[in-house]
Length: 332
Ligand code: NAD
Ligand code: MG
Ligand code: MG
Ligand code: MG
Ligand code: MG
Image 1 (spheres, rainbow, N blue to C red):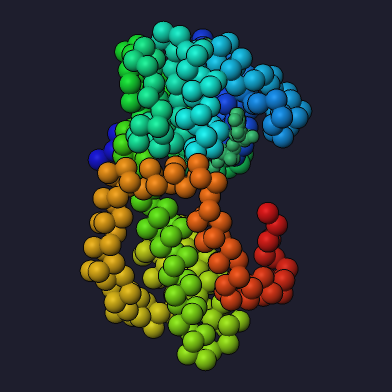
Image 2: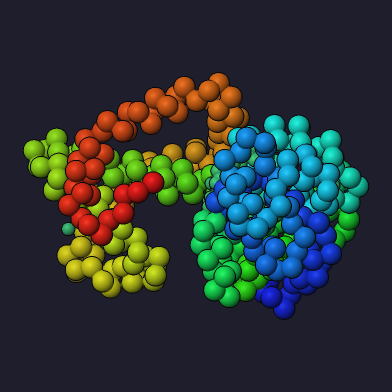
């Protein structure tokens, strides 16, 4: 079972005695930087000169310098720029300014787990990753609550890396909710698997295949959209609140019976064998290597896949139907 840590297990004064650089001011970066500051931590934000986020960070009362300056000033560096560019930022702006005993922090384990970043042995390497989007992390902190976090240590140069990670997690509200100890390997591999098999890949493929099945059988796309996509939210909300049990308690007995007899025919032994293959390709690094290759080639296939789905009847039908539902917010 997982090891959990709460406020009383973490010493805020550890991170308060350090100088923290937060690189990036997006979803996670803004939440970390603002909550660290409000927890009495000496924090600066590292953003490149032309960054659109600079003005926003300054308006919110933070001091903004370049990533290289931030790393030079600080002794705890939290890397919250997009994953595919972290290795470049590390080479150009972080590595030249790291000193003995500094700590390198991440919000996701991908670059360390798959070796795109290989930190020198004289620094601590830690992860503090909230299990929620940055805006929720910040809002919960402001309300005196917190989003659960996971924390990990990949390299413990000082012998004090885990208490430092817990202290950082406390400063962003994580220990108010609970911090689970993990490893970079477990976090990186399960994160990729979850988003591929279920959250993004599995779900979008399931919805599209079911929608196409109904439309090809002659049913109206609008009706198929409601049954296969729109109503998914209601089901997922119930699962989120109370697991499979609450969802099955809430739906009709007919729906529940259909769940039991048909679910295992749709996601069957063949699907599970493919899931094991997907996991193997994550574990052996081929997924991460292929993704970096695609990213560095300028995203040719990524853009092709994106375009194909934009034109899918499911999407054009949805655009039309969502306009009929005043309570559905389709803003980006
Ligand atoms: P994001 O895309 O929202 O923000 C990225 C930020 O980096 C932006 O402020 C951008 O201006 C800045 N940036 C881009 N290039 C830069 C450069 N060369 N130098 C300095 N700054 C640069 O990113 P995010 O979603 O907050 O993700 C950051 C990290 O947090 C990733 O490792 C991600 O996996 C992890 N994470 C994200 C979430 C989430 O909910 N979004 C949750 C957990 C972990
Ligand atoms: Mg420094
Ligand atoms: Mg994830
Ligand atoms: Mg992810
Ligand atoms: Mg129905």
